[in-house]
Length: 203
Image (cartoon, rainbow, N blue to C red; front, side, top):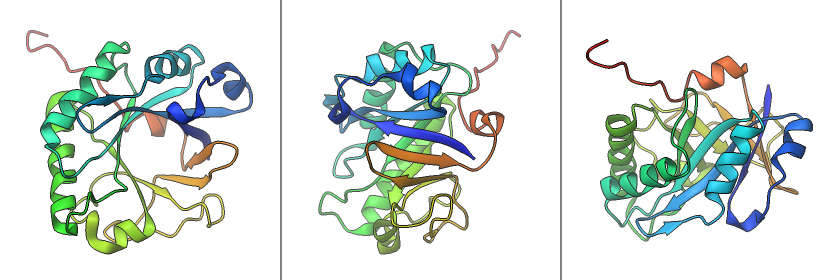
């Protein structure tokens, strides 16, 4: 399994070179939330991951009470302003709050968000969520997307998998001293889930 971490503005300065030397092979950094917030550390993190030869992932914190297509636009603009997508880069939806909406509306938001990312970026996003949130029906219809499950109470690489999924892709197994993850597979397996440059119509 590959070792990874995920970070946001709460971590402040991240020493990506040190993480790479310690065996971190992939990482996700928070890029945006809703339609107004851009993580002030995202550009630095995106650049640092790439320069350290770590598989780059960006995530958007979902606000299901808002417009999903507008949130995708905000997210992808932030990624573009940080240097854009390169082959194998990963995109993820952080789905962990319902904004006081019923589960069917949360799930519909997530499906529309994913559809918009596929249409605009050509990437099938990873879904980050946790067990009770998924069990409550907030992830209905997302079984076709890779699951990044937050289950720090389960042994590394042995998380419980909630409906609607039947298998996991990434397991967040620890939150100390930073969020730590594992991916079941090789680097090539992981990057195969990421961005692929679209071929020109004239090619």
